Length: 113
Length: 115
Image (cartoon, rainbow over all chains, first blue to last red; front, side):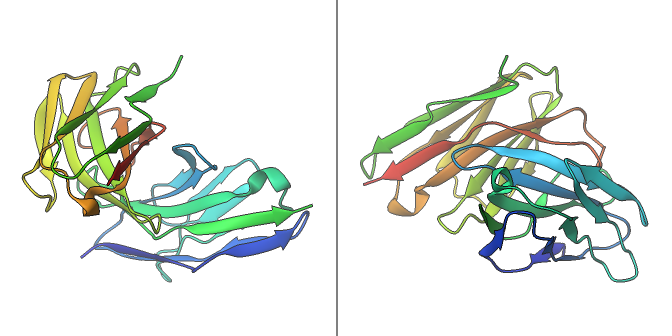
């Protein structure tokens, strides 16, 4: 079946540190891959996405590259800010027209000043 | 303007009661969803509707009944509430059926607490 595994949190960093949150997936074919972010007390917002192999999604300084060979979609940011503190979810949508999003368990990031 | 809105934001009720959560989207999307987020933040899809037709129905107790009066609304009715139903319920919408790359837009969530 389809599944997403992302690194366990919580992750605590100092401002301007480098961030990596690992995400790997299991799916047949070519799913679309997403990173969603949930700020405290809010709903989920799309952060970035990639729909085919070797695509790079980017937004707000965050990047993730769709790696078919390693079935990965790791999230990176070169210099985090306090305002990046949130829960980050990796997700996939299976190939073939299903809109169902399959989520990882989320990684809580806290950035300290 | 709020794209996907849910009411109420908080819902506290007793076991055995029946309650409803409402969702509306003003994005003109064809597809709407309900997700459940448990206490460990794990998100799982419950239902999906496209143009008022049910297209995804995960293994959810039949105490949960979604209703879509039109494509802009998807309400969730829960009968005989149980302690394990306590969670945050998120509504979402996306542009069209058949697009696995479509972005889903989420509402702010409804925190349900069953006492």
